Length: 229
Image (cartoon, rainbow, N blue to C red; front, side, top):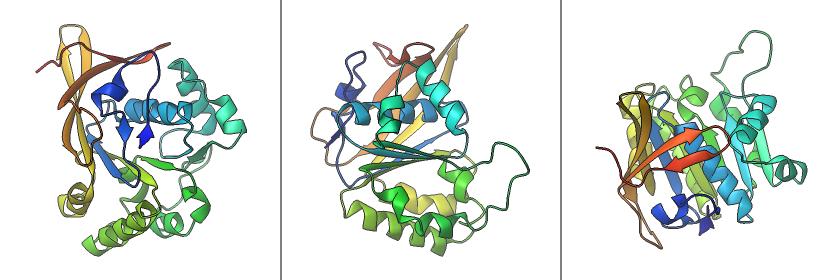
């Protein structure tokens, strides 16, 4: 079990303590629904419980990632310095974006990225949408992930809803051991985010079906006492 427990929230107790080793975790949701905030919280929880993490990001530079984590009070400098956390930014800081059609092949031919206990890709839809243009490529990538899972690696994939074609995304949904779907709930001036647990295989503890949360600077993830329907 790769545990995510930290003292200041109870997310671990809502999600069975963490994620089973060798799992594929899919987090799907619209833009702004909290996918990245959840994975950042997961990453910090993994690190605080002695696990190692690689994050492949299509959204943040190294500097932005460090600022983001510290703004949420997830201090990660020592983990970066001791190579317990590997952060891989995809987009260049300056200059034009390069062609992304070769990302899938480059991803699978970079074994050094997959030596940690947990690998987080945020977001998969942005990273390989130019490569996953046929269903067979989805199967190829899934086969690659399953080989890593056989070595007890846990893979966490963030996917933005509506970006990948349904026939391309469907195999990932079907193969996921854990499938979370995030959404935004607005009531008055309050913005809450909800994670619906659509699937959770091999749970070692109680798993709630619906987790309402918000994200606050200086605190990170704050769980609501009751889910908002």
